[in-house]
Image (cartoon, rainbow, N blue to C red; front, side, top):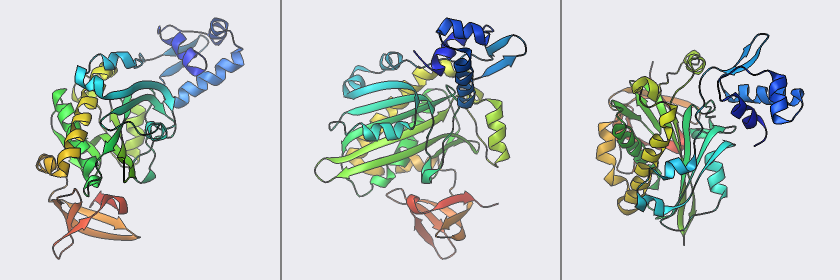
Amino acid sequence: MTGPLAVLDQLADGAIHTRQGLAAALGRPPAVVAIELRALHAWGVPVRVVRGRGYQLTAPVERLVANDIVALLDRDLRDRLRSLAVQPVVGSTNTELLAAGTPPAGRADVLLAEYQTGGRGRRGRAWLAPFGCCLLLSVGIGGLPLRPDLSGLTLAVGVALVRALGALGVRGVTLKWPNDVEVDGAKLAGILTELRADAALGAHVVIGIGLNVRLPERVRLDVAAAGRRVTDLVRLNGALDVAARPRIAATVIAEVLGAAETYGRDGFAAFRAEWKTHDSLAGRAVVVEAAGRARPGVAAGIAHDGALLVDFGAGAERVDAGDVSLRLAS
C-alpha cells in the first residue's frame, strides 16, 4: 500500500512515530512522509503532533473490510449483489457507481468509502465527513420500473433507514422532508438519490447515504457555528461505535435493498403511512424558497407521490424537492 494510507497503517498501533522512523519503515524520503501526514490531517484522521517526539493517533481508526460486511448479509441478499466494495478514498460513491454501468435488473452494486473528496448532498451541497467516522455508502440498482412516483424513492429510503436504526437500537428517529434523518432535530443522516432512465431497461438508481457514527467534537462545533445541529450513533447508542460499522452497514444495506424491491412493485403507497408517523415537519411553520422568492407557510404532510404539502394560507399546495430549498421558520 502506498500514499497516506501506508502512513496511517504505521500509526495504527497508537505509538508515537518520528517522521524519520516512518520514512525508514516505508522506504521513502521524510519530505514525502510530511506531505502524506498533511493529507491525513486534511482527511480528518486524528493524528496529533507530540512536540519533539513525533506523531500519534489520538483515537483508533477502524477500517472497513468488504468481506466482513458481506458475511453479515443473508444468503438471498448476497445473491442479489453484483458487487460490494470498500474504497478508502473516492471523489463520490454515487459518482463512482453511476460510472460503473447499470447492474442487471434485480441486481445491485454497493460501494462504501472511508472518505469522500467530492461528497455531495441535495442541490449540489458538499457532504463532508472525516475519515473513518461515518458510514458513507451508495447502493446502485438496475431495472427499477419507471413509475410516475419514482421521485418518492428518497422518502422510501428514509423509512428504510428508520427501520435499520430501530433494529440497531436507535429510537426517536424522525424524517425531515425530503432527505434528512434526525433525532431531536439534530441531523443523523442524509440521502441523495440519483437516476438514469431508459425506456427499455428501466431506471438505474443510485442511492447515496451518509450516516454519522462518531463525529469529532471539532466537526460538531464547526457545524454549530454554521447554525446547524448534528448527532451521531455513539451519542445515541454507545454500542454503535466505529468498530460496529460492518454490522451497521449490513443492516442498512438489507433495509435499503428491501425497500427498493417493495418500491419497484408497489410504489410510494407502501411507505407513505409509515413515513407520516416519523414526519418532523407536519404542522410546523416553514419557509419555502424557490426562484428567489421566500414563502412562509405551514407543512401539511405529504402527497401520494412524496411531494411536500404546504399551506400558504389558501389551502395546501404541492412542493417538489427538485425545485426548492426548505427551512424551519425562525
